[in-house]
Length: 57
Image (cartoon, rainbow, N blue to C red; front, side, top):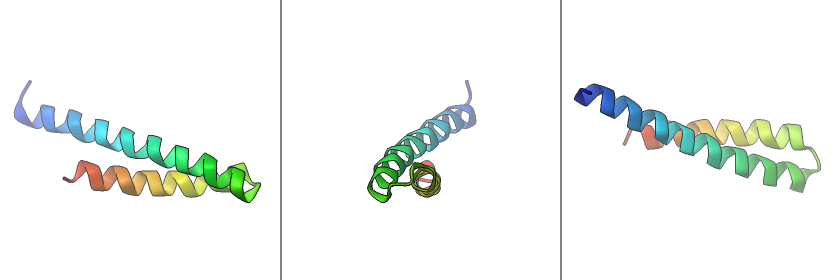
């Protein structure tokens, strides 16, 4: 496995971590708003942003 492949693997894992965090935030937000679908949509947007930030480190 080359250096680039290892970095891609770490980037993918960090993106997954960000999306998982966003999903958790989204469910909590959805419950608080009494609208799970909107909460999850907002949470996934947040999760993708967090994942991208973590992957770029």
